[in-house]
Amino acid sequence: MSVEVKMMSFNIRIRMERDGANCLDNRREKLIAVIRNEAPDLIGFQEVQDASLKWLSEALPEYTFLGYGRGEHYRGEFAPIAFRTERFALLGFDQKWLSFSERKPASAIKGLDQSVCPRVYTHADLLLRGTHTPFSFYNVHTDNQGPLVCLAECTLLLHDAATHGLPFVMTGDFNARPDEPCISMIRETNEELGTQDLTANLAPTFHGFGKVEKIKIDYIFSNLPADPARSYAVPDDDSCGCYYSDHNAVCAYVTIEE
Image (cartoon, rainbow, N blue to C red; front, side):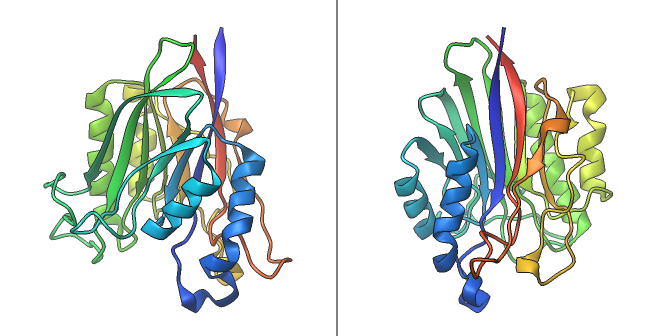
């Protein structure tokens, strides 16, 4: 018998006063409403800061949040994960920098088209209560500067998943369109790792608060049994004066054997 698990990847957009009506202060209730309405079991967040983690965890006490800042003193923006505490047992947690000094805060890959921002991924090993199949949950926000560093970062992420050896879920804002090298590389691990792009059929997910041409850069990958046809993006509009984010949250389902 199998049990269904719902996942969400959600870039909430950092607090920027220049966003005006779409500043995070004005979007908080809409953002929380998206999570409550969708009720995912697992969430991979991007662009979370210390203050936003505080109110997210206060508004959503049914979730356990894991992760910390990517900066030199473990502060600043990061990519936490959240899981429903009553559904999962936490077997292990880790956060690494996407660099060749993965334990060094604020480290990054040098010599490529890397931005000034360090990048991290968050990883938890979880056991769905009532089952005997642990799995890994990875969440990432790769660099937005260029394709070479994104490819290198995704290589580090995939290497971790492959060597760790557990079935996995990966959520994230990969800052890459479906035809770019890093996404093609992840999809090509289907034969070796069984990876599926559960969001392959989704429309573009980033809209910049309706100010730019929409592009798809948000993904959910997994090698657990899944039906990609059930995946979807959570719609939004600015009819209330603001969007819930400049990205659409994306959702997918996997099944885990008891």
